[in-house]
Amino acid sequence: MKNNHLVIMAGGAGSRFWPLSSEERPKQFLDVLGCGRTLLQLTASRFEGLVPPENVWVVTSAAYHDLVREQLPDLAEDHILLEPCRRNTAPCIAYVSWKIKKLNPRANVVVAPSDHVVTDLDLFHAAVGECMEFAAETDAIVTLGIRPDRPETGYGYIEADLSHSSLRMKNIFRVDSFREKPSLDVAEGYIKEPNYFWNSGIFFWSVTTIVNAFRVYCPEMARFFESLLPVYGTPDEQAAIDDGFPACENISVDYAIMEKAEEIFVYPAKFGWSDLGSWSSLRAQSKQDLHGNACIGEHIDLYETNNCIVHTTQEKRVVIQGLDGYVVVEKDDVLLICKLSEEQRIRLFH
Image (cartoon, rainbow, N blue to C red; front, side, top):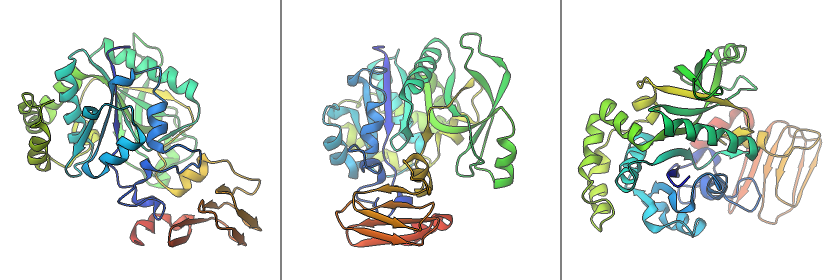
């Protein structure tokens, strides 16, 4: 286990969770579930026992350094990597990959977003353990695929070849293709097939495998991070990153690497996963009453109300009557009441 490393990507803005989430404190730094821990803290804790605590890394915006420091106080200071600007997931992953490779060329890495939810930790640990073992023993890239239970249009999909499992792991299959977020009719077709899975965005690879993949598929980006090898771990590192990082291509690792690489595998799993990309997904992951309402907060009274999510945690009494399919959120001086069917417009409201 000593070669296992965890990379948590924590730089997102979380605009769809306004007004709870803000540019200054995005959703990964909030207790959106009302459980006493933030999404970032929950992410770090679910890998305990799989990755040594000294091998945990967080890549985030420079603006969020103090939030990471406050919420993960045991994280080594030099394991908080600061992006001077947002450039999607490929530059983020390239940066931390070269840093890790300099420290340990035999490192085995799992990359996870900071704002996901997992409800069955036993199944999650079993899946992660097998994926890390497979990635360590091969030149393969592995992703966790989630068995879909509805025609979700907000996730990308993975098409797998289920006719042959890996020779090493019976639960791991070769990826045929990655599919973009589909229309509803396409998504309904996907869930009728046994070989389509949601793309969780959780990836596994040896550090040598991913660095080589960047060299082949993103040579310009690879040259930049390779050129910084002499300054990683020195006082000059941040200035060098601040200077060169903004010139990196703004591209996801899915486009940059996944859709091009040949040795890509998927582990199909079901462990109560959500990427919490919307208020609807938070409602789905929260405990609901007999009328489909999810309430986060203590002083909430509902009457003739159905299929709503109410997030009001600032001590005011909230009484709601006659709503069906709404999100109600109070944060500081803002009260949001919006149809869940229109929630994609929330990011336009602020």
